[in-house]
Image 1 (tube, helix red, strand yellow):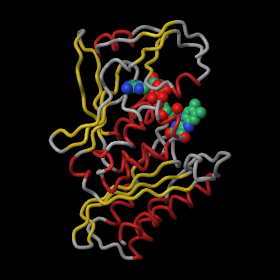
Image 2 (image 1 turned 135 degrees about the horizontal axis):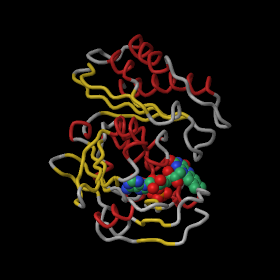
Image 3 (image 1 turned 120 degrees about the vertical axis):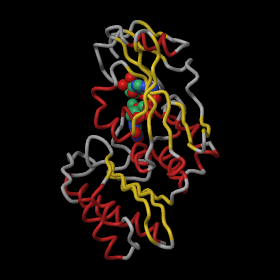
Image 4 (image 1 turned 60 degrees about the horizontal axis):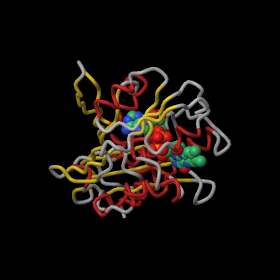
Length: 279
Ligand SMILES: Cc1cc2nc3c(=O)[nH]c(=O)nc-3n(C[C@H](O)[C@H](O)[C@H](O)COP(=O)(O)OP(=O)(O)OC[C@H]3O[C@@H](n4cnc5c(N)ncnc54)[C@H](O)[C@@H]3O)c2cc1C
């Protein structure tokens, strides 16, 4: 932010939302992404840290993570570790080096990096977002799936604050696995695949397959999900699902991996994740 002049630290959501309506302002959680951007349009940052949005708790068996909870707090949380074979904690840990995990927030990470591993894990766990907005000067909350949020995010964000991320009880107990490929173990994933399944005597009863690194945001491979639903995970079914996951992808290549490589990795990692869950 090249023209930053003021940092506001509101203590209520209503105040934060009112400030967010003013021109040349930006919401700031950890500030990792925001501060490094060379934006000239932002004159005031609205620091969200005094809004009491850093928490991890269960509500009616759902796991609710406050928007400004840091990735380090998620990694250290026993509640988060207990979710779906620990994939959420794994994704938080793999998202950043430790020094950035102490600063980067859960909501900031999915907004700044919607195609990265943390978003992939949340999408595979059917995560939902709570958004607060002002209506007639009153704070109104709405609930949106992460998938819909990604689809609409340009429209939803300007005057809204994400206050919480919820992982529904139904997804918390799923068997889950995340597979990634990266240039080095500490580098960010080129492609990430998250699979979260509900199995009954070897048959898949509910399936979520999320892919990252192959589009602007993480997205659900619904054709692949259909291939495995109500099926036993035989090698043939796994191959069919992996092909379906890669079919039709049109990723942008970059210095980490070409478009062709990303498509091939989507296929390979989908198969790997499903084989892992079969075992
Ligand atoms: C050196 C460096 C390395 C990085 N490496 C990685 C990496 O390996 N993996 C990765 O995923 N990302 C990486 N990033 C990108 C980014 O910094 C992170 O994704 C970070 O986690 C953002 O979280 P934050 O809390 O700091 O968000 P901020 O920087 O505070 O905000 C990011 C965006 O989200 C908006 N925002 C934040 N909170 C809310 C909210 N509650 N409601 C509505 N809008 C909100 C802000 O207005 C801003 O547009 C890196 C960035 C840098 C500078």
